[in-house]
Length: 465
Image 1 (tube, rainbow, N blue to C red):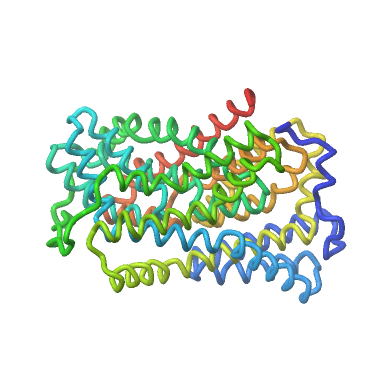
Image 2: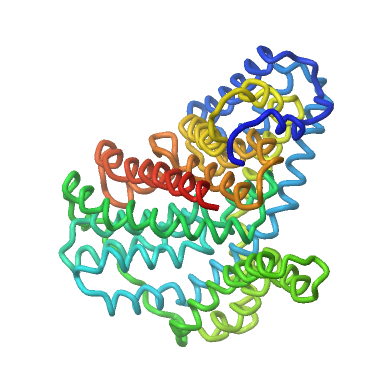
């Protein structure tokens, strides 16, 4: 079910907005992506503007009427934001509540207090994975850097021995596990089941994080044996909280949306009757909107109120959580516009026409396309959304599980070899006080390991489910 076949051609758009041939479409795709790459990497233009301009260039190069190209871009932007925008906002609110209430610190302090010296890297990857579920990657780095630096210094560890597990936990969640923006957008574009994708994503993420985190950190610490930089050593601010939420209730709140979505996926498999009242309830409760909304409402009590937040403090926390995601929403939306333009000019049909006689796995093709866009643009989110749009027609003839694996293939490819055109590369370099070469040997290799290992597990699962 995961190999390209001629029957999948039916999934391509019936009426492309241009009559361009394959050669012209190929040139148009390369031109559109090249413009995006140049604008992001050379001119340092915001990814939203780059994707918008690149979409128009794509449409023009493909010979599409300008009004139709604009309509395609606008439709894709609108549908993408409508599909994932509210979810991103709810995730941001939950993450802000977790950070401001001291809940994140409570998770960190509790686990580290019980971890031995030998198990410290494993404790750190666990912390990063749990905290990384509701947080964006950049926010997670900022939150965990003080912990990483202090633990490394206090325990006498090489910085890479602690830092790599933390980065691996965050990066795996960012690339492969909803409710992060990239996976959510890919699920929406490909039409995958969120619950199934979440379940398989977690199943793949755990061993991938272990291999790229605690295990790889042994080698990374030998290649780049550096101590925590003194000038970056954090000074913890004085606490202004009356108290902090408990460890158990904090973890339960963070995992609540995941549990609700997994319950929906389980009921779908066991009951498998859309008219059954149990499945109808599970479909509502386990929908991403309701699951995240429930977690936010619960978090306002278990995190906010438990930390002594009054109504004004809660309102301020929620308001502050939404402002930083404006750029993310615009990038995700523009990526959806670019994706829709790709589809409407007939690129999906072109790819299927070229590959219909191949015996190439659709999962491998999805990974390769995401890798190419990731290397070119430096953005995992842009790579995920663009690649998902290109390979969406391949999902038409797939089972529910293989459609979810297609999403995870794209997610794995989207984190391949972070380098100098990736903002995350520079964040890691600066926060850890590394040189460019040292960052390539550690962070970049770790990202590549996550991508390749993740694909390996996806391919293995495709053989047994």
